[in-house]
Length: 228
Length: 295
Image 1 (cartoon, each protein chain N blue to C red):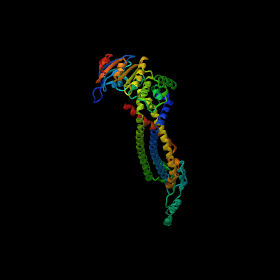
Image 2: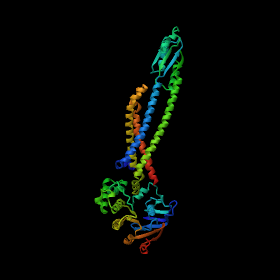
Image 3: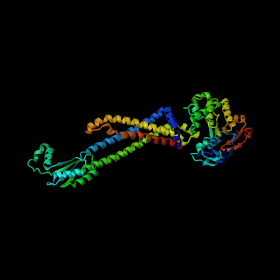
Image 4: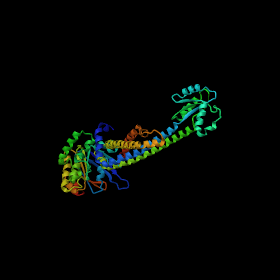
């Protein structure tokens, strides 16, 4: 699903963000990407959804070398990837339903199908009664559920979540994590960047630890080693 | 482009929706376009008026064919009428020429008392309103073939000066017009960039969920087109109002029969609306293209 071979990412005038990262994520896996701030988690996520280009090395997403994609091919790759951010990235002047409908409109789906899918996904995240509300009238947890709904509405093969619970209290954190886990149970590959150790302990999933741009550990044993 | 052609209603509704969501931004952009186009249109109307005025002065031109004293005046008139088809041709005999000269001298007409009636040569007068220098030259050379013609005078020096003046005016006008239009384009592009900047978050999210560049651009292009056409229409209405108010005063001052349509013809109104739409479209493409390249 996602394969990185000796990937290196360097921003001008800064220390390397990623150093010789080799990593594979299988189809249907749920992987936590963990490490302190500045470890390279977000950079790795941004490389996967083609917001950045690796300085060297190879990155395959769905078996395709992203370095060889033309700019016009990138949007089509992104349609198979759902992304959730810590700051939600919702449009404040659009309703919950309009925010969630966005990825489907981009694909040119008929309005009736968009409505049907949006209603279904909002039901699944428990926000069917908030469809006509604007994001800023919702709680942080609800806003993140809207963001998760937007990421999942297009049935992506891969879901990337960058610190999805960073702004939420423990109860809302579990609600959002349960949604991600449910998506994984339906077959979506999930990659979650977090530095919240309690999540690693609660959800017994594969953990990849990054430090200063390097993979320093990979596997379930990290929880026991307490690297996060 | 295919996406735009397949779903025009969707993109138009998105553009209208965006303008309704941010009416101030849309209003500022439309008014900026209107002001820029009004100034450009005003200049075009002034240029047109000036050219009309000079053209009217050129309309005073008449070509004189001076004949030998014994020439057959009627035969010469017929030949001149053939050479200058469609123009007013008049035969002026020697005594008639003297009478006119005396009349022109007014109170000093008495100075001509006692001179022979054939002092001045007979001539053929050809009225050539609005004639251009090249045409006047060609007509003069044809009139030189009139039987008995001795000299042809078409006010060469005056016409050449006028032609040069008009030529310079046209060049200066075109250069100023281009500078004004370029200034308007920069102003409009910067205003529309503000609109794009205000929606950079929306653009970022669109791209995040897999929108192609064209999908992102299309509503902005339609917005630019609509705002441009609206701004152009406003400029045209304002210009027509100014022309209607100024035409009588200008007509009085110059003695020309100037109407509103002489200053602001339909073609200028069309150019303002069409040019506004094109300017809005181009400026939007520039603004949103820059934002997309920035990412």
